[in-house]
View: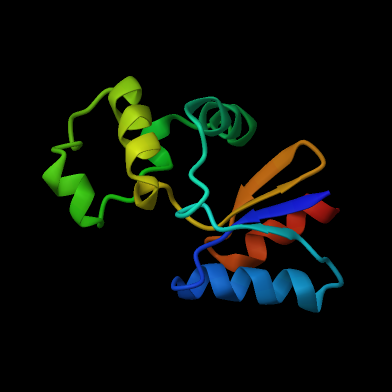
Length: 113
């Protein structure tokens, strides 16, 4: 099963979804801004990606500045992501227990090799 945490307003997210579909994949689409992930889900993805929360954080978002997350701990970042899912880098594709961020979109294709 393949899932994409998708934001249709994001060009990279749209490009990643189109790339998956063009390659014969029909992912489940999770509109994560409306269906916000839990802290446990974010933590699981971070483990799968092998990265700290700070690397999954969108630093260009207004919420990043408003919440003063520049020097925040991973614990504080996780709390902020749960409350403000716009802070989560997108898109994220999950497939067979693996995950990839679609930046660039082609990076997600490695999940299917």
